[in-house]
Amino acid sequence: MTENNQKPIFIVGCERSGTTLIRLILHSHPNIALPPQTKFLKKIYKRRLLWRNLANEANRIKLGHWFVDNFEKRTKLPDLGLEIGAIHKEIISSATSLGAAASGVFRLYSRKFDKPRWGDKRPYYIKYLKQLLALFPDAQIIHVVRDGRDCIASLLKMRWWKEDLVYSIFNWQEAIRKGKQASRVLSEEQFIEIRYEDFITHPEKWTRELCRFLGEKYHKEMLQFQETAEIAVPDYKMPWHSATRGPISSTAVGRWQKDLEKWQVRLIENVAGQELKEWGYEFSSVNTIIPLGERLKYYKGLVEYRLNGWFISGLDRFISLFYPWPLSNQIDRTSDT
Image 1 (tube, rainbow, N blue to C red):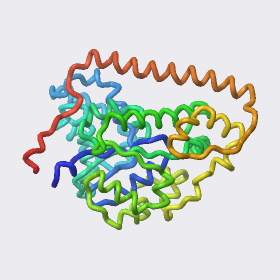
Image 2 (image 1 turned 45 degrees about the horizontal axis):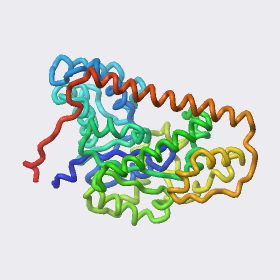
Image 3 (image 1 turned 30 degrees about the vertical axis):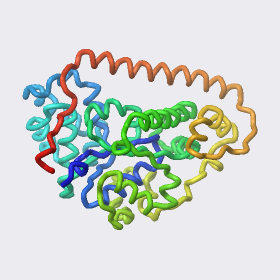
Image 4 (image 1 turned 135 degrees about the vertical axis):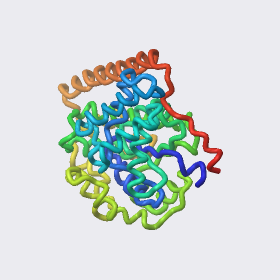
């Protein structure tokens, strides 16, 4: 096994960008296991002062108890099909850092499939790349980009998406901006961006490119991901992931033209026009007036979104002042080469 083949893989991007499709294709690789979306990583990171130094066994026991107590509480851990007892044992025996704790859970999942490599798919990790890389310094990150108008049109129809149009616009725009920042500071070996529309037009070409990026051999079975989807996508998610059971299709491209009102398109293009342009998305010919009430909602939403972002980032920096312990375990891989 080469050094490159041991690096964790994270798929990120705005929600409804096609990250699940990429996950299933990579999960179909004989060396890679990528679980259904989990929600425990950010939770244990935010609460890191509760566990403090995980080199101390008593603190690992605390963290292990947290996993037991929260196994069914918004962590999505049951979707992985793992025994809570196995997770508890793994945490106590080897979780000497938060990164190691998460790695242990994901490794348990990859062992189910007898695969050496693990990762995770969570779109909003794009907003937390600094923290993600603090936990997993050698991670390889795949950023999936899709036309913001299509992302937003799709999000607004999702029953689990509780945000309004304005928040949805800023959410997509921030994902694009964070990706742009990452591309400037991370190496080509660690960070890659792919356009959803390009991928579904030439899936084999871009799957080969992803394999090259990950240092893995391409397997044609990867594009037969529909078989994987039957066991890798929980049934309760099928209402919004039903397309994973069929062939790759471009039918959802341009859905915004029928799903969004003209003023909504105008607002999206006015706010996020620069980002749309940078990724080669053509502007519409919509020329309509945005209702005054919606303009007022936009300004109110802008203030709220920015204040919330400043609060979250400020709180994270404040907590870090009181957390001097390592977030990751630096693994010496020289013996494996």
